[in-house]
Length: 180
Image (tube, rainbow, N blue to C red; front, side):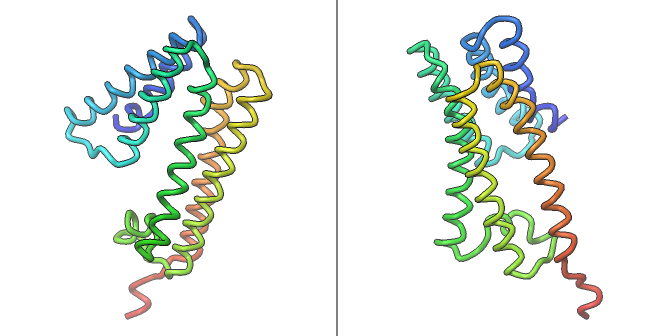
């Protein structure tokens, strides 16, 4: 259920883009993102900082897109979100001297500190690369190509990168039983 809630706004965006246009789809994305937060609250699911950041960015860039009738803003939302994630990860490394990924997952997965740092830097680079690719596609490709990239391309690329992350973590995992 949580997985469906995670992707419902983007699925609705895609469907309404195909049925209507980018502006209707943007409005649906805005409503869907608010409903996502409400549903998470009702289901007593955790609402993470990422959810709040995405909500804020969707509402801001969506509103500007609709007010100005300019799809450039909703296209930039994707890059802004990925740059924000990269900056949060980098900020955690710089100011807290600890990987934010380690802070989230370190209780369940034991890795050497260097592995956590490398993993975090890999995610920073990945997020910045996605932001750059999104900017390129938004600027030089058609609106339909951008929508397809946003919905399917980013999902596929993220899935592959996440699987790669899993292999990296498995390879570097510390077996606590053998350490005793």
